[in-house]
Length: 129
Image (spheres, helix red, strand yellow):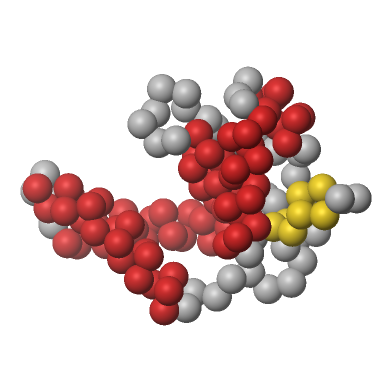
């Protein structure tokens, strides 16, 4: 599993881990039932604190992307992933709002923003091909 972690980024490392794993699931690089590396193993591979990995895994569990059990460790959810319900749509709008505001401030047209959004969405659906 390849996760790009930027230690110089303003985005917290645990957030980068969560985002990277969700992106791996969206791209079908991480499949339902597949085990993720142990907390200790991933922390060692990335050179980060165990607690950071643990926090990311627990957030993924809260959101319904993974299951955590004592024998298998952290496993990509076998059943259905969380639905794009009203709660998710509200959170999505909140997260998009600053990106859209910045795009507007930089003079980006709505069509350009939509085109970029479509490109990224299509890239994820196609697995990054």
